Image (tube, rainbow, N blue to C red; front, side, top):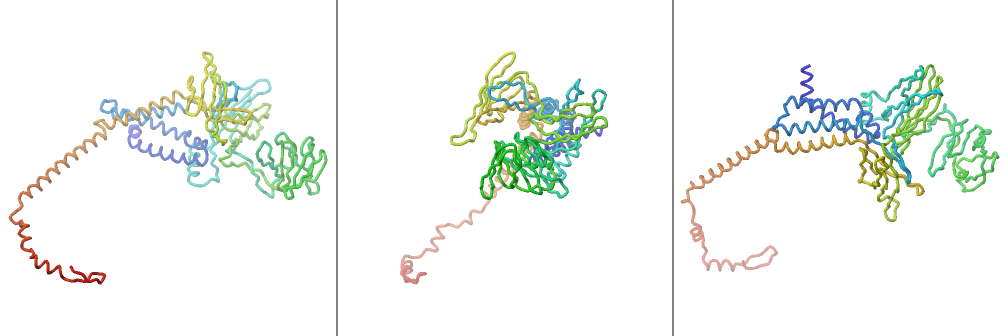
Length: 541
């Protein structure tokens, strides 16, 4: 036991923890860049092993205070360092387990006292038609790294995910003596259905429509009816009130309850579609009925639909697939949703019980209300790019009511809640603001105090005598003194040598010049000599 405590309180462990912590944080940054914030949170930041590193850090720092007797005046700078790290880790723990944050969407003129959590919850409601069980809320974070992902970052992410236990979970409960179990099956982030050609698959007809102002691809299964922007489409399943696409003798026909038009793309020829009559359905022709336009670019194909992750630039819902079991009955349920969004629940019945399951944000109630009086958006001249935007709000509380203006870098702090201007939605007709809400006063101030002590410790350690810096200062001072003494010694030795030189051997410069002096007549004769320069010219010296 003594060996264990000695290791826990050793500086060697401190160094190991710092290296592991730094390496893990660096890898987590790459994971977040490649696979998203939720994956990084799931496999690293919120993983049990990462939190264990923080706990061991705290134990190590607290143990070092006792082991090295830091509660002394001469050790105040080192003690400040240890207390700083302890408070920073403690503040992070408070933020992780006690605090919460989310988004408050408000339309102009609307008053609300609810916000949406920034975390996604699995919500389970059970009833038997007479009584209802208290709703079950479970927060889960899932990794989006798949088996097909390769590379160092993906490999590290898979290892971290395996270390934390993977995405698997299980909820076991009961109602009226009937057992209920909800278990994890699959998770796809940013999910969309992709058509995979397969000769052994089912028959699909691809429909491309532009309802709602954007292009959307749909694959209509033979024998299926789907709704696209309040229009029903049926493929080989005659349905009243729907746009029916029918196969007759290997030829596609169309029958619709609406009058419309279509344009043959190759010739730009426009034709009419008669109401309630069977006509030829033309591929690669643009059909229009009311507010929807669509085209079938290809003939029906054999294949299957597979859920895959879309590009990270697209913002789609995540898919959580779970298995619900009660008694001898079970059902696979697909739940679409994500954080900051309340998703539509899936309703079904099993074993005489009614279930409602959803995956998405949790609605949270604030102790006061916020009214958006006016949303203000300024754009750059001659451009649609936003220059600045602000929310003029009114806080309505039991005790008082006051107005406030929230904009970038100008936040509202009230009753432990902090409101930031996050984003907006301006369609020209409806204005909506999104305020980021944070409730972390205790964790924030604990962390701030920790950083303050860390800064103070950095200053104190520079002037403390009995620290490594103090020892280095003394060593540098001694080196300077030795260098000064050595310089003086060298100077004195040089001065003595100079004073002992024999100056009798010095030659008189004037006597030397007299012995080599040339007469004026000889110099005149030398000047009259004719020489040839480099250019071949003859001239006197």
